[in-house]
Length: 208
Image 1 (cartoon, rainbow, N blue to C red):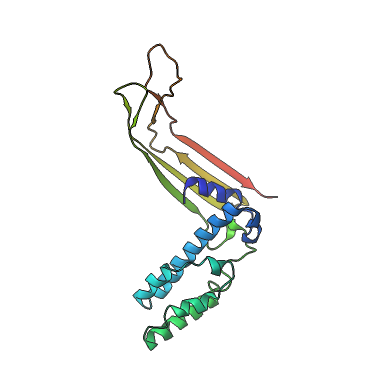
Image 2 (cartoon, rainbow, N blue to C red; image 1 turned 180 degrees about the vertical axis):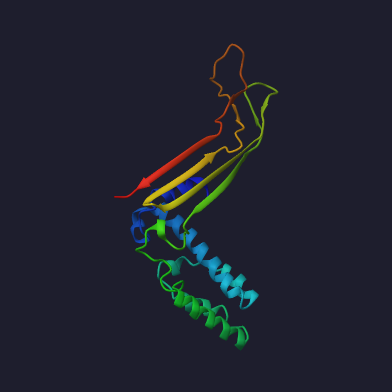
């Protein structure tokens, strides 16, 4: 997940999955993140029964289960139907435990605000690296150097009733050499301009 996606999730953190019908980009992002976490948790649980179950569960698309359109337990049981009887029995026992814990019962949790949703976690932190190759400039024989930016963002929902987003753009602080536009007039042609330096930002949200 990129920093921009995390900010998008922050803006709708007070909404529930059911209320995302009018927010298609946010809804698609939530389904992708939630189904990915659900898939990883289930793959870890069933992979302890049989290693091949881990790979099979990781290959499933669970968007339908999140929408409530399919029986999640039945679909998982199908993944173990060609295993030995003891493995099938152990898999069913493990699924029963997961059902009792609530993981298999309506994992979509349509009326739980995203800030409190168990499939998103209490704190979300992400980092991204952007790399730009060397580029030509308007000055013959001069090229703008390659550039790497490292961005970090953390989202902490439900902190004393507030949602907090903290981030750093261009953590390393090195300025990008940006090729000057053709109409950047100077007596002596300038090949590059300095880009943005390190930027710290914070966002505080409160619903009342």
